Image (cartoon, rainbow, N blue to C red; front, side):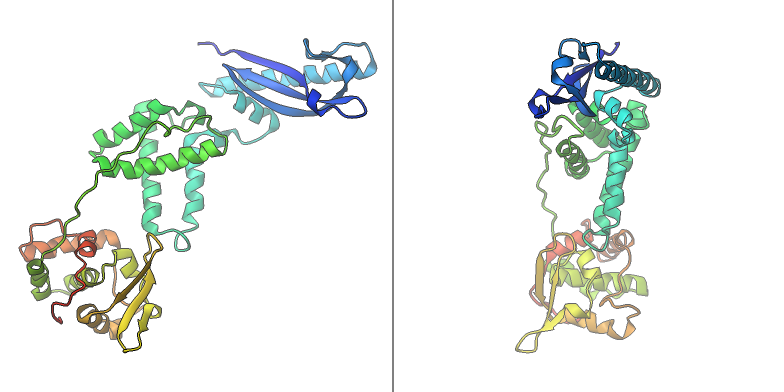
Length: 358
């Protein structure tokens, strides 16, 4: 379908000056989308014809102004043809950007997302956890795949992203990657953050998620029974790797800390109360909420166990979360525990009552 393209020159009568001069602006309309921008030029009010959008009196000022307006119109038409050759869709915003020399590329979805991720990556360790950035990066990669496989494009203009695009992307995650409701919700929430940012910045005309509610199913993450926890305490690993994993897992069980918070603990987080009992006083890495926990015998004995073996400032010998989560399953299998044993399960087990010292 052929686009409707129109250029008008308008006088800003509401900004008329005392000397009788009126500022001029250009209005571009393409398929119903209108944008305006200043021409940085003025005209004497009495020689301007609003209907034709030109100066009508045969004066030197009028002739010079009309030549200037014709030049701008010619440039606009050239930009329109150039953009039409390079893009499936040309928008009024793209035309304005081309004329003013602003970055047209920043009006595409993946470019905006990539710029967002670049900013977020610089905040890792300052105001952002690595695991959170990994989710941003995963969402970007899945979106890029979706565009290439389903839309057959390397990128898409923000003005072309609509509610159907949102629903199709969500379906793609569930069908192609077998994501359940909660897994897809995590990525869609990040995608929503990008589109909401674009809407608030004026890069998108609609809030795409206004009528599209993301669903999340509340799940019982489960926990270990006292007997199951006892079996892990009794387990004597035959190698140092599993021994470290068992100790970190038990530490999480008895403090309620998640893996990333446990991995970040240092001597500075240890405090003693008036009775001499040791506490950990820190903040959860993910939520930044205060997390003060009294150290019972088991987590205390684990800290002391590795005190003289430390090769860093951290209290415990942690490994990457991806590797760590593989090994508790191995321990669970050896101990006869038929559950999906992960770092999340350890935190939700949260045995703040003492069993016995290792």
